[in-house]
Image (cartoon, rainbow, N blue to C red; front, side):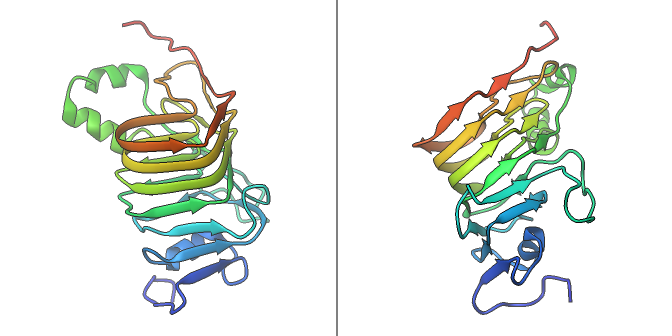
Length: 219
């Protein structure tokens, strides 16, 4: 029954041996379960659904890629043409290890709206939690460890084309973040990594060729 009601004794969910798609394994998993992914290219957009899951590849980022917003998934279709590769909201003790994450898109707001709420803490907080997303990884009010990743060729409207962290406690270790871009228009900043609140530790990472476009408005 596809209702997340089952309990699995080994707490490890194998993709694609047991589940064709990573998102299906996440659906059935519970916090502190492991979703173990074999090499391949997976055309998916993932949401941890509030669960502190350990998402782990067997052979590392060079052989295991998740590409968001693509229709090349054997006829399965596109779920949302503008989504982060991975979204974590209200998640505790999650981990992502050993993937390349590409083609994510972070939705956002226009700069006029940003200015209209910037001075009001409640409205600003609502915007950052509910309206602005990041491209590769979008983490909101979560605690996560990111290890041995390549995050490349992602984009966002405002914030965090590669990684966006909002009120999150995050450890980032051995991650390559490259060629992520925020285009001209409503850019706020943080093309590689953007942080708003929380605590972040960055160790042994490379950030290169990430860019932020012009903001077309004047204060």
